[in-house]
Length: 631
Image (tube, rainbow, N blue to C red; front, side, top):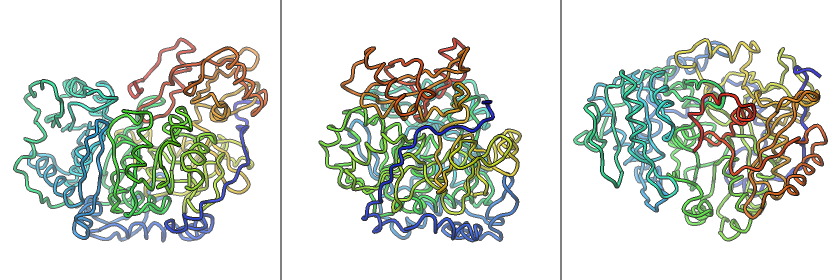
């Protein structure tokens, strides 16, 4: 069997769980397939209605013009994103809480919509007075905080294009992103908090800016308890920068197809790329898809555990959340500090109703065991949503059976930086299949094809492609139009997502992982996700990663890396038991030839396992770009 053969899906549990009856009280869509069929009958009418949710200064004349890969959305429309996110809520419900900010050292702060608008306007006025104009790029290197969100919104208020870089990436990664975006101003912080320590960001920021001569201003938010270094000639203290600035700022109107932000991908493979999102299309999609696919509303206590440095933070913490007037909890710090039960403690104390998180966090909690979860009252949870990597059935069961005791909807979702809002998954009122990723949302249409664009048969693996344009799809790659075009030229007429997947006869998609992570073992093409899910279903396995190693007979042999759950001890006996466990579930072709116990897996700071790094280490090769590697 060649490398062109279909990818085999080895792990399918066949389980199906009914949706909780309580979801009918807060989730509007009862039948996902009917919703999909109705919206697909007239996709432009659906997207037009999504656009109608926004506050337009000049309504668009057309919903869309062009085709996949060169579409323009809400043509002729003019707006400012912050009006939809701030002004209308500050006018109608000024005392409504926009954010409750928590910090791992116990500090808390809440901010209302009226207060958030005032702070945004102050910072926007300071930027404007400093010469920042519409179209200028501003780099935001800030931890998850009210100030970090204000920096983003202040840029949008005056039409500047923000580029948020996760606080903690190294100086080289930060400088590369500053240079590529052509940022003239960098907004940063001196520290962030991680596991009880003040983590130095100032040195990283200073080193990055020193190598970026086009940066004419640095604004520094300072919190360090230690001695503060003097600011450089072009640097300003945050508080001094906004001192005296007015709390009202006229929003700068922009065209719907002007860029709102650039967000650089995490760089699990190759050079990070600057994904460009537009003012109208992105905001319409983020504002509509969040409530439609989750049912999260203003009366919820909602916690998204992501960070503003990632697309989930942009869409579900900032723009999508604010456009819907949500009350969001944000927390700066490690999720397992000061105690392993910190996540549970926050859910219990704050009475969280909707939680949006990642498989990484679910597997972390699973490693701590079920007893820790059962010590806390988690009965307020009505739904948990999970996205970021394939969610293995064992982690789904832990959230559903242990954390929620079967009461809540636990819904897998799939999207990516290039598709900036939920794109396929399960809805809260639908039956859940833990071994599937779900169905497309609304008028989106996905298919699975081979490298020649031919549909593969149901249940066979291939390249996941999007067949229908959507307003919240990226509009360009900053400074690299050719790279952008490749996503639509690999299989002309489609957007190639870069993931491998299957679609079964019922239309359920199972995303198996990145196309780069497919194994070819003795002529069988299988996804790392299947091997990893089989491993994680063993009671001693907390996390797992699988890679292929060259093998003279099989082509590739599987090597697995395993992080054990708390209370389990590495041994040769356990290694053999885990390998036999995989053999039982996947058969001989999916069985690891080697299994190594490791204290942790290399991940990006957004939680994605860097399998290419494991492969490079095994082969003794150069590790390549590791700027996004989690410490």
